[in-house]
Amino acid sequence: MKLYLITDNADIYAGLRMTGIDGIVLHSEAELAPAIATAAADPTIAVLLVTGRLAQKAQVQLMAYKISAATPLVLELPDRYSTSRRNSAIDWE
Image (cartoon, rainbow, N blue to C red; front, side, top):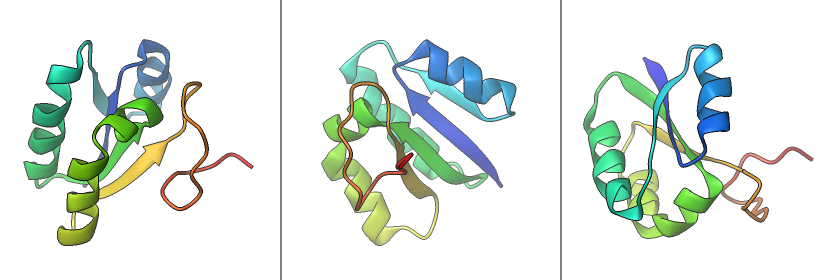
């Protein structure tokens, strides 16, 4: 089982890639829904990390996975654009 990152920030991708976490950097909003669906369908992915701005754009799709699927566990990582929503995000405070 592995962790997988979906982000729109190349710096976050590079940093997590150095720790061994694979992922994808998206360049348009049209890529978001297919990227989430592909990652959620992969049985080897146990935890899906999505950065804040993308998580806000795909809130409905991500909540559907959170409610109905056993895996992957969907976690929102705050980025410089996101505001803290303690109920659904990993927070640094």
